[in-house]
Image (tube, rainbow, N blue to C red; front, top):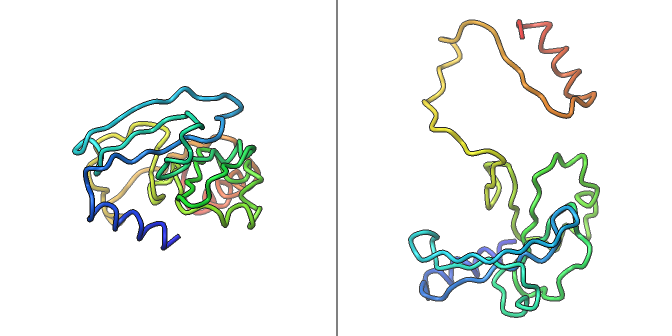
Length: 163
């Protein structure tokens, strides 16, 4: 991963006018996307373009592979591979395949600590959180896919605080 990151840093400092090309290689839940967007410098740290046109893979600066559609791996291994995931990892079996996962340099996910954060919803402008010692009232929990681990966590939490 460090080599790919170093390549991106060096490319930015040496030539910030070259447009970067990111090819969305895989399907998205079985559907081929029709992507073609460009951003000028200022809208993106470098001028960049994203496309789903697989015939441009040989000129790509990065390839995006959707974790739920890992079929048809790109033929180009000399550029960074970017894993995209928007689902709970428990529902994405390919994440357990160490050999396959070792090919990826970056992560594009709903997680804000990923290389390319891609939240599922637009984040609101938030005020800083209230310090814990100043909080009062109840805890509100909202869960989706109420799997056993999440449900048990809530049961345990409710032993100590009102939810």
